[in-house]
Every structure is written in structure tokens, then in C-alpha cells.
Image (cartoon, rainbow, N blue to C red; front, side, top):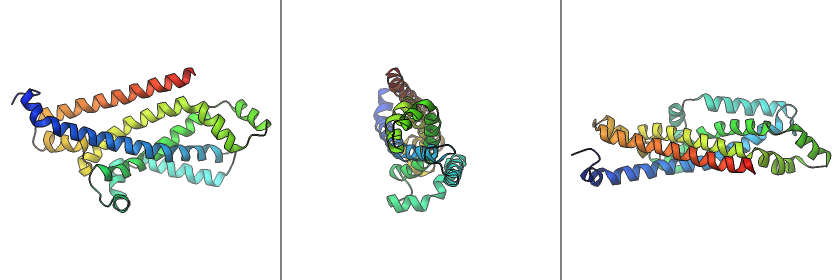
Length: 224
């Protein structure tokens, strides 16, 4: 059978489509969870840091250590280590739905650090002006820190999505499904290089598309 011929697509097309949708589901599901929890953690880091609006050095040290540890654990080890939590939340430890749990856990510290960096770039003078007018810390977070750092947060979300594509491929290699699982089962175990090449092209296109969309949205908000 000729590579990428109509007959090839008849045989492999649905398999590639299903694996692509599984990968997109894993990435988007974990991106949403990672962004919500990671941004909240990043805001907490900014608030309780030394000199922050709600300074708490002990809490900051604890949260900072959690983020550092979370970022230092290799994803494959993390995925295996939290299998009990994955089973508790999803009822299984294999498949695309189960893979969302470790992907989300891996994304949280990464997003938190990106959020902290973005919000620390907000002009201190703007925050001080709001404080002088009687704004509360909740109002400063809502009306200053988040809006002012939004372009960087969007760019960070695009970067997170790109990283999650790579993580989802590793998850697929150990039972998570998606394009990683397809590439291993057909491209490696059966030595079908056409399938591996097709999976690679789809992954590259996915990464390029996510980065392009993220950059465009970030640039639009930056101009505003």
C-alpha cells in the first residue's frame, strides 16, 4: 500500500482522526483545569510574597516550594505517582480521560510561575495609586493585576498548551491514548513509519496552530 494514498487514508484515516481528537481533548481539558488552578496559585504567590498586598513570608515559602517541586518532577514519574488520585477521580488510570488528571497537575505549577512573572511586571506606581484611593486587594487583583497582565497571561496559556501537547504524547506512550499511543503501537511496535510520520505532522501542525492563535489573541489585547 502506497504511503498517503486514498487506500491508505481509507485504512488509517479514522484511526488518525480519533487519536487526534483524543489528544485535543486531553490538551484542552487539562489546559482549562491548569489555567484556573494555576492562575489562582500564581495570584496567591504575588499577594503573599515579601512586600505583597497580603504579605505572609511563611505561606509564600510553602507555596513557592510546592511550585518548584511540581515543576521539577518529570511528567512520566508524576503520572505514575498520582495513579491512585487518577483512579479516585476518573475510575481508571488509563485512557484519554484519565490522562487529563496528571496533565492538569503538571500544568498547575507551570501556569502559576508564568502568572507570577506576568503580574510582577505590572507597574508598582499603578498599584500604589489604587491603594491611595482606598482600593482593596481584591479590587486591585480584579481591576489592575489581571487586566494589566492579560496579554502575558494569554501568551503563557499558549505556551502551556504547547507543552501539554508534548506531555500528552508521553502520556499516550504509557496508556493515555491519543497520537502518542498511536505512534508507539503502529510506528514503533509494528515499524510502520508512515503512521509515525503522519502523527508527527499532525502534532507539529497542532503546536503551530495553538501558538499562532495564542500570539494573535495576545497581540490584540496588548494593542488595546
